[in-house]
Length: 137
Image 1 (tube, rainbow, N blue to C red):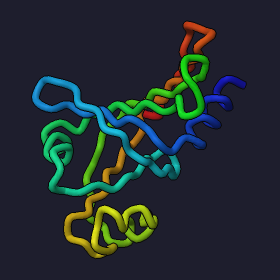
Image 2: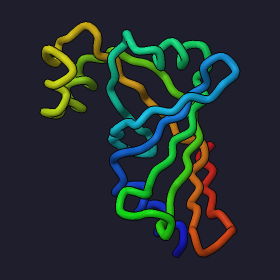
Image 3: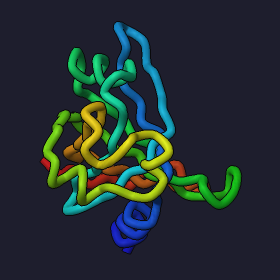
Image 4: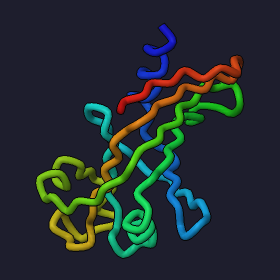
C-alpha cells in the first residue's frame, strides 16, 4: 500500500531538485523531469556547468515533492547515475513549448539530455520517521 503511495507521488511530480557533485561539494538545480519506466529525463544546455559536473561524477540525487505546500507533504528521494545523450529522437520526444525560451529550435546544437537511471526510490512521510525504499538494482 505505501509502495503505491510512493509510486503515485513519483509519477505526478514534475518540478524537482537535482543535486550533483562539483569537485567535493554538492550543487543543486531546479529541473523539470519526465519519467518513463523508472528513468528520468530532462534537457539542458550543454554549456552549463552541471554537464561538466556529471561527466566528472555521474552520481545524482533528486528530491521530488513539496509542490503543493510546506512541511506537511510527503516527498520522494531518488538516487541514481546520470548519463548524457544528444540523441535527436529523444530531444524531439522531450520537447515542450517552454524550451523555445531557452533554445532556438529542436535542432539547437547546445541541447543535451540528462538521463537518470533510478537505483533507489525512497518515500519520506512527514508523519512517520520510517522511509519506504524500493531498490531498483
